[in-house]
Length: 239
Image 1 (cartoon, rainbow, N blue to C red):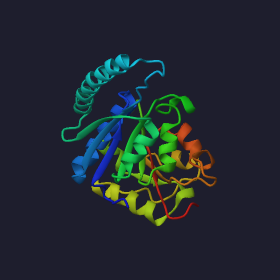
Image 2: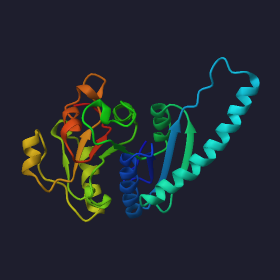
Image 3: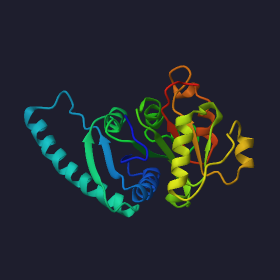
Image 4: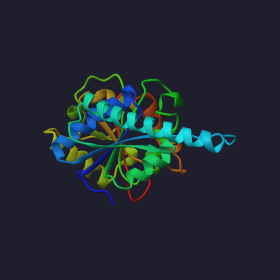
C-alpha cells in the first residue's frame, strides 16, 4: 500500500540525460516532503554456456570490480544532478522486474525518457511503458530537454479526464499544495485543452489500461506527443 505524500521515492537510473532529469525532480520532491530517495541501476551480465570453470571465476572477479565502479559512478551521478541525501544500489537483473520489485517498497517511482518519438524514446525500449502499467505505486515520467526546475513541475497539475478519479485529484492537489501552487480546475480531454491551459505543468492520469496494456490507454497518445511530465496513479477501478 503506497502513501501520499511519499516517504520513499525510487529512481531507476541508466546514466542517460533522462534519468539525470528524473534524479533532479526526485531530489526536489524529497527535499520538500522529507522522503527517502533510493536510486537503482539494473544490468545483466550473462555467462556464456561454453565458459570453463576458470573463465567463470575470472568473470566473477571482473564483475565484482565492475560493480564497485558502478556503485561509485551511481553516487557521483546522483550528486551531479542535485541529490544530496540518498541510498543507491547496482542490481544484477533485467530492468523491468528489478524496478517493479523495488517499487513494492516505494511510494513513488520517478523515471526519465529520451527525447525521441515513438517506442525508441523509452528507456531501454518498453521498460517505462511496462513499469507504468504494472507498478503498484504511482510512476512519474519526465522527459529530457527541459530546463524547468524540478520543483516547478508540481505546481499546476492537470487531470486527464479518462482518469478522473478521487485518488488522482487528491494526489494532484497534494503535490500542488506542497509546492505552493494549485491544480488546474478543468480536466484535459484533448491537446486543445492543454493548449488553452498554458499554466499546466504536469498531466495526471490513471495507470490502468482498458485491455491490460498501456497501448489501449487514452493517455498513450499523450505520452508520444506531450512535452509535459506525466504522473500515472493506480486507481481502484479502470475507467
